[in-house]
Length: 281
Image (cartoon, rainbow, N blue to C red; front, side, top):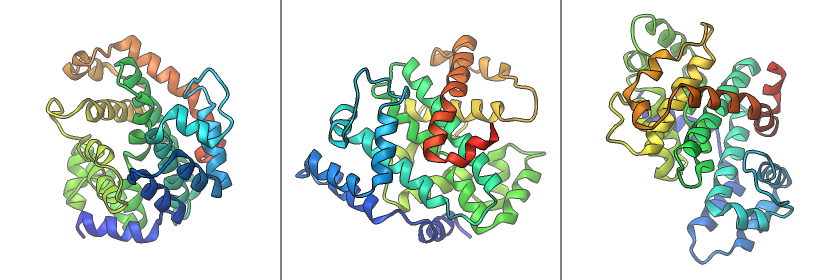
């Protein structure tokens, strides 16, 4: 099967709700108002509650109280609220996956960690509206979830191949594509913005110097997350020596601070997006 076939099957299984489609249409329509967008969000009380809780969390660190969806859109901006909508409906769509709850909990735990790490690195680099990077980290590995759903036996084949190859080369050998490429293809099927698709598709490229800072930061966050969740003792020395980190002014103290930030914020985000994952702790 080609990557497009995997993504097509997944897009037919994991459907984004009508509310998401309507919100996307409004955001794409220049004539829409903030009230129009807020009204659609309010139709789904669970979504509205998640947005207000996240908007008032330490993740955004807004000094005042955000008590209405309209204020959330005004304060955070349409793009950021849209990203929170994507996060909510994506986790909701995949809750129907015919996989063990243990696998899904671990999957979303790692996804949230990657999201928090890239957000921290973006803030350290003074990337404008660094919170928007969170969605890149959260969705960066949906391709693995897709393959788990469509061809679960291929996952073990990839892990076996990783004994001799890098994860990306192992995936290409077994599947003909990487999880990153599958993630990007699913987002394309969902008609999400290229600003999400591009970095996720290219995160595993060997030479990232030609790609934008979002792609570079996603690659670093993913690597740090993988080491942090490894069964082996954490060893970031090879990352510290990487010239890419030097170019981005990421040193060992900053790396350790990012991991501390992740450990502090993880439970709050998981409790909102995927509460069952919190039982791991």
